[in-house]
Length: 128
Image (cartoon, rainbow, N blue to C red; front, side, top):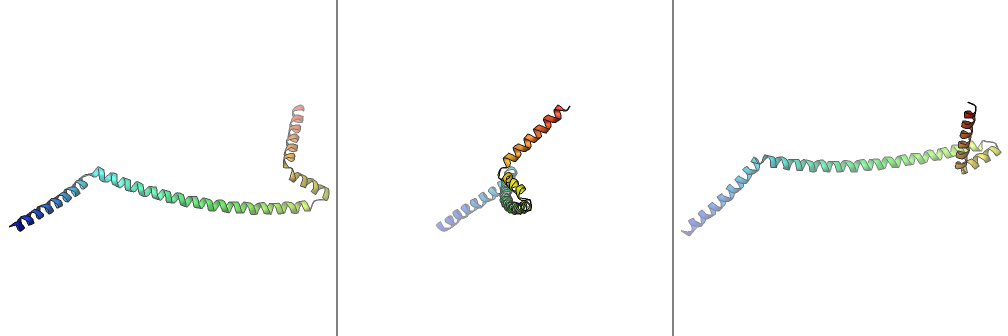
Protein backbone atom coordinates (compact mmCIF):
# COMPACT_ATOMS: atom_id res chain seq x y z
CA UNK A 1 0.00 0.00 0.00
CA UNK A 2 2.97 2.31 0.34
CA UNK A 3 3.67 2.06 -3.33
CA UNK A 4 0.42 3.63 -4.55
CA UNK A 5 0.81 6.32 -1.89
CA UNK A 6 4.40 6.99 -2.98
CA UNK A 7 3.35 6.94 -6.63
CA UNK A 8 0.54 9.36 -5.88
CA UNK A 9 2.97 11.63 -4.00
CA UNK A 10 5.36 11.63 -7.00
CA UNK A 11 2.49 12.38 -9.38
CA UNK A 12 1.39 15.30 -7.21
CA UNK A 13 4.95 16.69 -7.12
CA UNK A 14 5.32 16.32 -10.89
CA UNK A 15 1.97 17.99 -11.47
CA UNK A 16 2.92 20.85 -9.14
CA UNK A 17 6.16 21.32 -11.06
CA UNK A 18 4.38 21.30 -14.41
CA UNK A 19 1.70 23.71 -13.17
CA UNK A 20 4.44 26.00 -11.81
CA UNK A 21 6.24 25.96 -15.14
CA UNK A 22 2.98 26.62 -16.99
CA UNK A 23 2.13 29.51 -14.67
CA UNK A 24 5.61 30.91 -15.12
CA UNK A 25 5.33 30.68 -18.93
CA UNK A 26 1.91 32.34 -18.86
CA UNK A 27 3.21 35.09 -16.55
CA UNK A 28 6.05 35.70 -19.00
CA UNK A 29 3.60 35.93 -21.92
CA UNK A 30 1.37 38.32 -20.00
CA UNK A 31 4.34 40.51 -18.96
CA UNK A 32 4.40 42.56 -22.18
CA UNK A 33 6.38 45.48 -20.72
CA UNK A 34 8.99 43.05 -19.44
CA UNK A 35 9.28 41.32 -22.81
CA UNK A 36 9.52 44.67 -24.60
CA UNK A 37 12.27 45.71 -22.18
CA UNK A 38 14.15 42.44 -22.82
CA UNK A 39 13.87 42.90 -26.58
CA UNK A 40 14.98 46.51 -26.28
CA UNK A 41 18.04 45.45 -24.28
CA UNK A 42 18.88 42.74 -26.81
CA UNK A 43 18.48 45.20 -29.69
CA UNK A 44 20.57 47.82 -27.90
CA UNK A 45 23.27 45.22 -27.36
CA UNK A 46 23.29 44.28 -31.04
CA UNK A 47 23.34 47.92 -32.10
CA UNK A 48 26.21 48.62 -29.72
CA UNK A 49 28.20 45.68 -31.10
CA UNK A 50 27.54 46.80 -34.67
CA UNK A 51 28.58 50.36 -33.82
CA UNK A 52 31.81 49.12 -32.25
CA UNK A 53 32.56 46.93 -35.27
CA UNK A 54 31.86 49.86 -37.60
CA UNK A 55 34.09 52.13 -35.52
CA UNK A 56 36.92 49.63 -35.75
CA UNK A 57 36.50 49.33 -39.53
CA UNK A 58 36.36 53.12 -39.98
CA UNK A 59 39.47 53.55 -37.81
CA UNK A 60 41.36 50.96 -39.87
CA UNK A 61 40.28 52.59 -43.12
CA UNK A 62 41.30 56.02 -41.82
CA UNK A 63 44.71 54.69 -40.83
CA UNK A 64 45.19 53.09 -44.25
CA UNK A 65 44.11 56.30 -46.00
CA UNK A 66 46.42 58.40 -43.82
CA UNK A 67 49.31 56.09 -44.65
CA UNK A 68 48.59 56.37 -48.39
CA UNK A 69 48.33 60.16 -48.18
CA UNK A 70 51.60 60.31 -46.25
CA UNK A 71 53.34 58.19 -48.89
CA UNK A 72 51.91 60.33 -51.69
CA UNK A 73 53.04 63.51 -49.90
CA UNK A 74 56.54 62.12 -49.54
CA UNK A 75 56.64 61.18 -53.22
CA UNK A 76 55.37 64.64 -54.20
CA UNK A 77 57.95 66.31 -51.96
CA UNK A 78 60.71 64.24 -53.56
CA UNK A 79 59.49 65.16 -57.06
CA UNK A 80 59.27 68.85 -56.13
CA UNK A 81 62.74 68.78 -54.60
CA UNK A 82 64.13 67.14 -57.72
CA UNK A 83 62.35 69.67 -59.96
CA UNK A 84 63.60 72.56 -57.81
CA UNK A 85 67.15 71.23 -57.89
CA UNK A 86 66.94 70.88 -61.66
CA UNK A 87 65.59 74.42 -62.04
CA UNK A 88 68.32 75.83 -59.81
CA UNK A 89 70.91 73.88 -61.76
CA UNK A 90 69.80 75.60 -64.96
CA UNK A 91 70.27 79.11 -63.49
CA UNK A 92 73.46 81.15 -63.91
CA UNK A 93 75.96 80.49 -61.11
CA UNK A 94 75.54 83.76 -59.13
CA UNK A 95 71.74 83.50 -59.20
CA UNK A 96 71.86 79.83 -58.23
CA UNK A 97 74.05 80.70 -55.22
CA UNK A 98 71.55 83.33 -54.05
CA UNK A 99 68.63 80.92 -54.49
CA UNK A 100 70.47 78.28 -52.45
CA UNK A 101 71.08 80.83 -49.69
CA UNK A 102 67.40 81.71 -49.73
CA UNK A 103 66.44 78.02 -49.52
CA UNK A 104 68.60 77.64 -46.42
CA UNK A 105 67.08 80.75 -44.76
CA UNK A 106 63.37 80.98 -45.63
CA UNK A 107 62.74 83.26 -42.64
CA UNK A 108 64.98 85.92 -44.17
CA UNK A 109 62.96 85.76 -47.40
CA UNK A 110 59.71 86.13 -45.47
CA UNK A 111 61.10 89.09 -43.53
CA UNK A 112 62.28 90.76 -46.74
CA UNK A 113 58.86 90.26 -48.35
CA UNK A 114 57.09 91.71 -45.31
CA UNK A 115 59.44 94.70 -45.33
CA UNK A 116 58.77 95.19 -49.04
CA UNK A 117 55.00 95.05 -48.51
CA UNK A 118 55.19 97.54 -45.63
CA UNK A 119 57.34 99.89 -47.74
CA UNK A 120 54.90 99.72 -50.65
CA UNK A 121 51.99 100.35 -48.31
CA UNK A 122 53.77 103.31 -46.69
CA UNK A 123 54.58 104.83 -50.10
CA UNK A 124 51.02 104.38 -51.33
CA UNK A 125 49.67 106.08 -48.16
CA UNK A 126 52.05 109.01 -48.63
CA UNK A 127 50.91 109.52 -52.23
CA UNK A 128 47.25 109.93 -51.28
